Length: 371
Image (cartoon, rainbow, N blue to C red; front, side):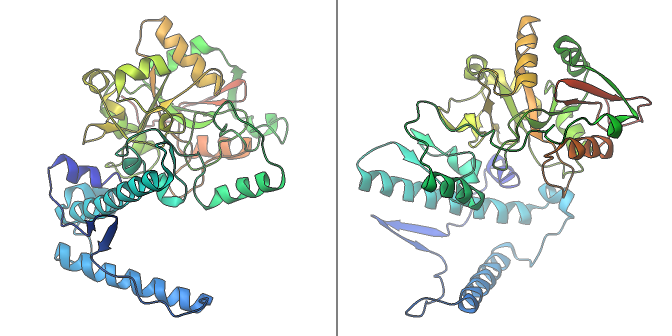
């Protein structure tokens, strides 16, 4: 998704890989034929391997190369890699759009809910008209939630599903012994806001963790996105490729000024939206090369520390918007426990850590990535 945006920004016209004829559609490559009856695991694997090999050959022909001409951290500089990414992304967008239209037609209602791993494709979700809902854990991990509801149905709901169903960060008790090398003080919102306004990059690990792959401000790295440079600095802190974008988080009233509105997708950061002129000016650190962002709207005290900072920024006359990305180093899962948070805080050389209701900083800060 992140790399495909460079193709969109450059106005590339990718080769269409799907065609539509009324309710039917045809892919450029037909899937391998299935045998009658239920396939065993080996047959399924063979079908998968055959499909992957055929698509790989097709993209090799399309790009004129069998692999990138640039290292992973510089794929945005490789036109062939951008072409492949954008072509694949457009295939997903066009197909899902067609299926969404067929579903609404068959159901006779406009309200649409998506599930499955492809429903995590934020760029695709952002192209679909509303009303559209995607739960925070639509992929295979969400099957556990569905299984629990099968045993004990949740009953009528007046509010969308809360994503904060994971383990409490302090479930294992006091972490004093694990943090003896750190300065530990009670959390003060004004102090935390001041650190962020000074350009510091920190993390929040507070309360029960989010379900699903999107960090929704309880296991997040945060920064003030007032320059494009902050994107560079946070990617460096996370050891990520520099072409990867970040998301912004704010309150609903301010979000209405920063990007196109999404009634439900922004609750769980699951839809790309085009930034407004104000959004591009106020928060360039969370606007991608194609002019989109993946917004999150925070309501009430869903994430107390981040919510309090947003309100404090507004009270001080500063734009109440933060960069929000998952609290994890490259190749690592999102932190869960306090021990995870402290280890990641140290390994990424972040400036501060909100852990529960306390603020942690290093006694002797090392030279990290700063303004």
